[in-house]
Image (cartoon, rainbow, N blue to C red; front, side):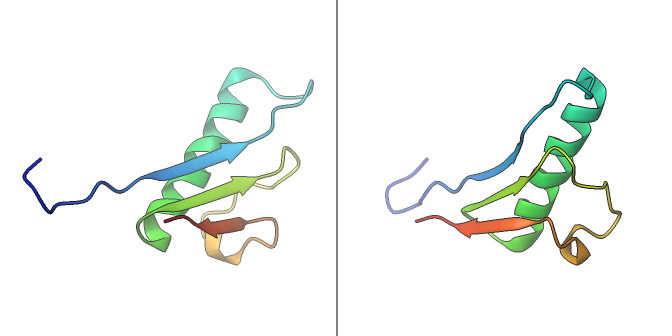
Length: 69
């Protein structure tokens, strides 16, 4: 990284419940990460454990987005 260039980060978060297996929990976190990347740089997106997996995460009422930095 050369001087003057910043570092950006995007995060996808979810909660896993007893009804989840590793695949469903990972898939939900992956969807949240993808939504964070699509929303711009320096974003955190979280989905609760009962969030439906929508193809268009921007349309999901359960989507929580926070800008960082």
